[in-house]
Image 1 (cartoon, rainbow, N blue to C red):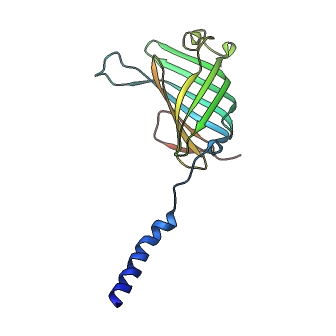
Image 2: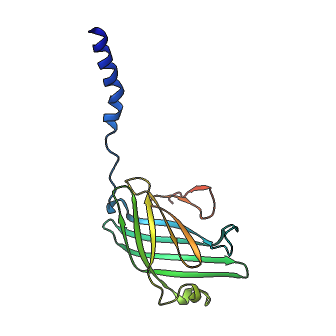
Length: 183
């Protein structure tokens, strides 16, 4: 009888951490709220399947999310640096929506307008006025929404974006971490 009581006590101790952990956190649209600084890297699609992807563009994006599935404002400074081409493009967010599933995955749909007065003339080739909204997949890595990632595929490139809501940022195209210090 004593060994049975010891076994029950031992099993109770083993299962205690499992009950303390509980269910994983549920994600919602509210996870993405406030201003975000995002860094984009575009990888051009290779001409042949056995060729590597090459980073041909980078971008700095600032956007504001309302926590209810809408992006209310945003700017995008995009630099295309491909063989024989180096141009800067400035874009403004026309519209944006997002939806976050309970597991942290989700989607977004964004429309950007080229600010022609602040962009190289060649930018109109890549960002025409009649461009449809771009769709991307989202992954939120914590329920507080401090960081999230998006990825999308268009006819010429794969776009990878990392977004942060706090003052710590990642530089596009590098693995270095930088901290911005408030003034």
